[in-house]
Amino acid sequence: MYRSRYMPCSECGASVEQTASASHACETERRLAYELFQLREEIARFEADVTAFLDSAPGRFEVWYARRERLGADGGEARAS
Ligand SMILES: [Zn+2]
Image (tube, rainbow, N blue to C red):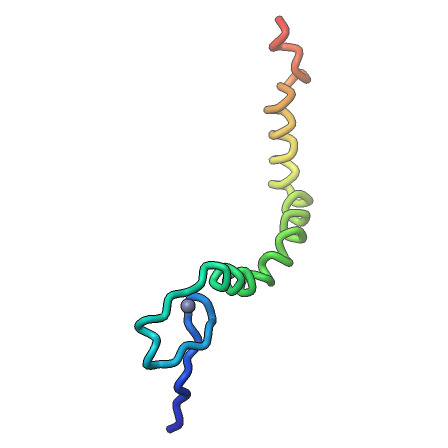
């Protein structure tokens, strides 16, 4: 069976010759670009996921609770006295 002399590096996606794989060191920029590329669908989904969460009952509670924590239950007047 034919096997390519080159295999993609699992860390950075670079095509690495099999005999050179032991000496391969990933370039930081290339590795980051490769990781970002693999996360592209998750990144694209993120905003929709956040919006959907904030629309859900638990999300609405979190928004209410955060506002309450920031302003206080009475809108911040208790801290003035
Ligand atoms: Zn690599």
